Length: 74
Image (cartoon, rainbow, N blue to C red; front, side, top):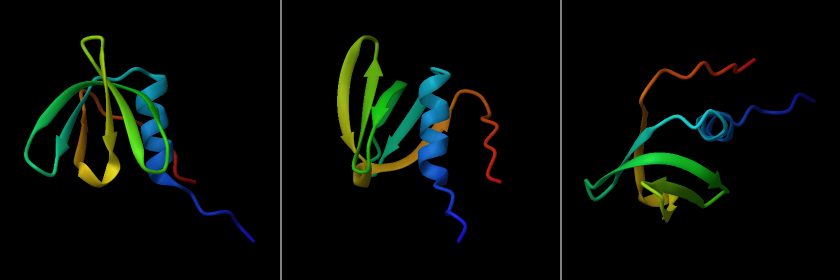
């Protein structure tokens, strides 16, 4: 049986490893700009100008990276 691809984890991991600047749009309309330091099933550890914030994924609407990410899904 083939294993399903977890696009979310692949995408966040690429953003983290390549230290790509990301704008995170929260469901309340607030925006954060910085880099992803770590993530798990429920949270994203985000770094903005040296200040860390732990954001719950259910509060995130959109990730907008500063450049396109080449995600291999096959």
